[in-house]
Length: 261
Image (tube, rainbow, N blue to C red):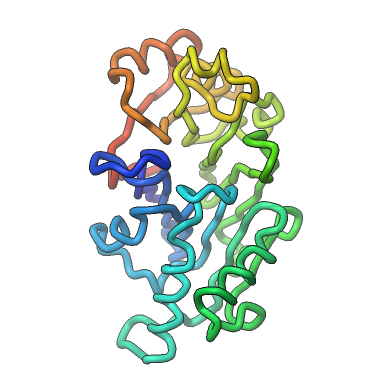
């Protein structure tokens, strides 16, 4: 599996880091993009990834930095199909995996922005408990995580080729996620909070590096990759915080950084 960090930042738009998103590619040709916020279409173009080859898209929750580029992505694929652009039309419907209620959200978004797209026939939408994989080589499952009370959120597990990758999306502390993280080859975790923010949050909607390290250590994660980064602390400070609990492989990534497992 190839894991590419399309974006490693937050909802704050800045040059250094795009919104958090990950591209997963298997040797059998199945692909998935986890979350689709601002900057993701540009990252796809910079990478040279053929959008028509995308088989799965996962959306962890409704915040704009995780979903705002979805209408543009869907419109681009729709236009490519009706214009019969060489190399662009899809052979099978795109499967979108998401949080509870995503089916209605996509229907509403498309009615507003892409009314020509027939959601029922041109997309496969899977809410939690309805997970599907067309080729049965890439298994995608989700579990609920705490974020903010006004919207449901899920984290995703991707399994293929005897490898396991977890993308938490935005989440606060939840020991239930240990089941999903258990023995993960790679865990890509929200680390956007500083420790003081984490301790002072009335509702702990994000993790700080210390908590990421603690969860990774408890679950036996092989490689921890932090994302949703503001860069308010140095790499050395972030590393020291994680190392209070976790001694495994650790990466503080940059956009478009690639990992192979």
